[in-house]
Length: 290
Image 1 (cartoon, rainbow, N blue to C red):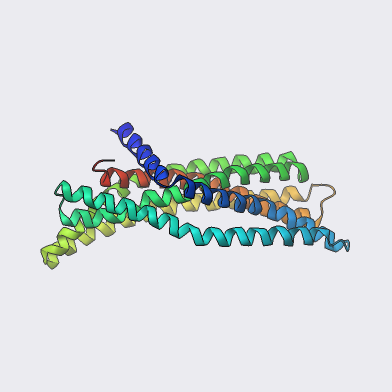
Image 2: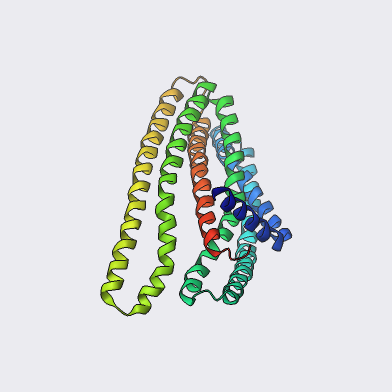
């Protein structure tokens, strides 16, 4: 059953991508350039800081030009982003609605599931950005740290990040059964509201809020472990900084920023996993005929 759901998810993503491939690729290209700038920004700022301290303005000029290009690209991307993805949502909501009517699906279920159509579209919207961001960000960060701060710092940070990533994925996995049940309750909610019975609706709400609380507890425990390990990463990195020879203020600034970038990009991995699984649950519920 699991394989069937996963295949259905991939099929659904292909269908969305094929609906508007040129527009999606254009947005992904803009996202890619934005990611490149974000990855280079700490290095450029650090270079500019060291240059200004030595009365050299070349670094600040380079930073300003690259920043301006990024602003223009980001502006165009923000304008086109909602237009393109809202058009995809319109198409797939309409398709689901027509298909559900033909199969005589209950109105309450149609109403509940129409909201789930947006979940897979949002995943497509963020998947490329998050994945490339993680890959490029990690590569640039590790290269900079090993070249300027030493291999020991880079390896220490990577090992600790791998630990908290594994913990985060484990806790995200524990949330999925509750999430699946919560989506099922979205259908039930419409029926209970229509019953016009306060006691029935109150019983339903208690069940729903209990599931939400369970998800929140699991998420809080996972975040606690992740935050503790991130604290260890920062402390270890700062201690290792003091043993680095020929270090400048600009390198220290960029190093701290790249450590934060490594942590952030590793944090994207469990998010990508969780969002994919969440979208799969939604697709399972709305796929009358994918």
